Length: 168
Image (tube, rainbow, N blue to C red):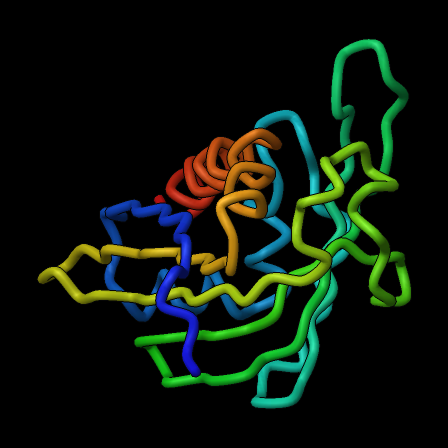
């Protein structure tokens, strides 16, 4: 029986750039490193094996809070579906520098935070602009609440602002 109680976290942004350019910024490592991570974070590593079944591994470097040391935060996942210039579906998880799953609790997030998410990224052509949506679906309100409480949406919005700047 299918779970009809899916909870959703949706992030949307319109970019003043053609869809193909936004797609490349999302899929090419040297371009990802220009925008991955929120403000005041850098991205020293972006590895991409961009094919269904291939994996990605990103690093963002910065301070989680002003009183903490600079830290590398790794995330990775596997590509599940790719429709060129339209859609990417992949897993998304906290990881170590080798891409191995790390329990999110070790990063101080609530235990309800999903160990691995499914992320769907859609690219919609709007003339010479692009509407990008990032969708996370969870199976419970507790998981969604944990994602909201960790300011996941705000982190994405900050990264997408850097993406917008990199597209200029």
